[in-house]
Length: 324
Image (cartoon, rainbow, N blue to C red; front, side):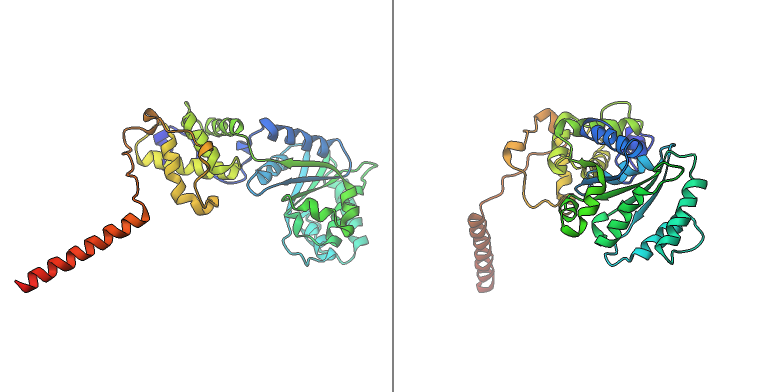
C-alpha cells in the first residue's frame, strides 16, 4: 500500500522467514559465524536458542539455502511422538519411499540415502524447530543421528532450535546424553539500540529505499516499544510506515511511532508507558506541524465533580422549564 509513497521495491518489514533480509551485523553476525563453523567444520549436534522473535527461523532458512548443504526442516510439536513415528517423518522428508517399521531398517536405508543422493553435499542438515516439545526418547534418537557415517565421514548434522528454556530441559537427568552430544551452542539475543538502528537501515536498503525513512528519535521509540526483538521491530516499523503514509509524511518521526503504541499494545505486550528515563523528548521539529498539543487530562476526582455539576445543572434547568 505504501511502497510507491516511500519509493520502495518491496515491503521492508514484512514478518516472515525471508533470508534475503537476514541481518548479519553485530551479535547476530557472531552467531551466524559460530553456527557456520559448527555445521560445516565440527562433528556433533548444534543448538540454537533464543526468545521468541529474536530471528531463529530466518537464520535457519539462511543456512537451508546454502549451496554446500542439503537440509530438511521439521517442526514436531507432539510431545507424545514415538521414535518410529519420528523416523517415519524423516523417511517422508528424505523421500525414502516408505515409513519406518524398525530402527535398524530405517538407519540402513538412511545410510544409502546419505551415500547415494547426498554425496555431493558437505553436510546434510536435520533442523528440528520447537525442540523443547520433544520427549527424551525422540531427543536422544535425533542426537544419535549425528554419529552416522557415510564413506568414512559424518555427513549428517542435527540442529536443535528452541527457546531459552530448552537449556533447563537439557539439564534434566534423562537428557544428559543429548546435552553431551551438543558440540556447538549459539544464543540469539535482542538487539541493542545502536543495532536496532542498523537493522532498520539494512532492511530499508534491501527494500530499495534511497534515503533514511526513520529519524533518530523515531528509531529510539521503535527500540523502546520492541525492546530490540527483530520480529517486534518489524511490526512497529511496518505500522509506522503505514501511519506516515496516511499522514502524507516522507520521514517517520517519533510521534508517529508513539501513535502506533495504542494499536499495537496487545501485540507488544504493553501494559503501561515505558519509564520516563528511557524517553527522549520530542522536539518541536520532530513532532511536526500536523500534531496538536494534547490536553492535560483532569484529575479523576475533579472530573467526577464536573460531571455531577453538569448533571445537577441539567436537572435544575428541566425543573425551571416544567414549573413555568
